[in-house]
Length: 92
Image (cartoon, rainbow, N blue to C red; front, side):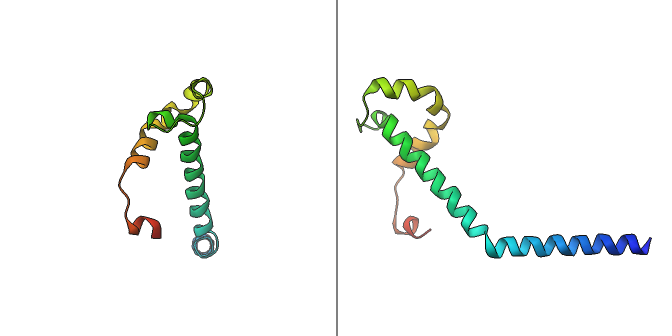
């Protein structure tokens, strides 16, 4: 039984070390990638559905063809585009 507990403890230690190495090496990169992806998605919606905010960029025909794919994200996109921003938003 003691050997089984020891391997469980070593597994826990190994898992902890893996999580620490992940945090030190790639956590910032993965957060940056997610932030970049969100920005690109919001930019895409702005280009295609800019009429909702009064920015006519694409003809409405193409916007209507893309509408079924964009509908789930419109509420959060409008909230993000229309919120007030200050200097601290640019820092993060």
